[in-house]
Structures are given as C-alpha cells and as structure tokens.
Length: 114
Image: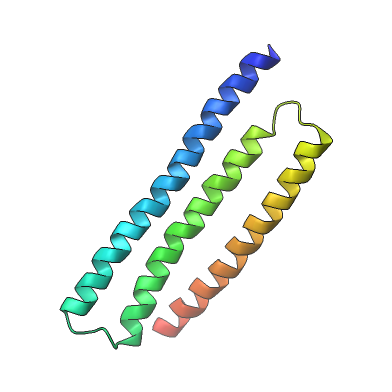
C-alpha cells in the first residue's frame, strides 16, 4: 500500500514541478514581450516601466517557488527518513528565504510605483 501511495505522490510531485517550470517559462515569455514593448514605446529609460517589468516577472518566480516547495513536501510526505526530513528542511528554508526577500522587493517596488 505504501508503494502505491509513494508512486501516486511521485506523479503529483512531478506534475507540481512541471507547473513550477511552466510558471517560470510563462513569466519569462511575458517579461520578454513587456521588455520589447517598453523599448518599442521609447520608455526604456523610464524607471516605472522597469519596475513594472520586474514586479511582473518576480511574481511569476514567487509562484514557481511555491509550487517547487510543494513538490518537495509531497515527495517527502510518505514515510520520510531523517535524511529526507533534513534535506526538506534545508530546501524549504532556502526557498522560503528566497520567496520572503523577493516578496519584500516586489512590495517595495510596488509601493514606489504609486
């Protein structure tokens, strides 16, 4: 029974990681489009345009980090060893820290836009 749950969790984690990759890809594609539009509009030197592009891409990265962390949690949810728990704690700490500081940067830039 544990092997069935482990296999199911593995597929869910893989799907969640795929969503994370798609978030980064979608964010990168949209960011490239925004950069091209910014240059085409002649607003390349406008700090507000730079801020908007950054906030948009950072939001996609934050979303991708959340999905990646979710995938890691799913992978270790069924019968984890102490080694698995330690690795998850390290990964979760790093990703949560990245997410926290990126969100702070987004909020600071958003506040500067108004």
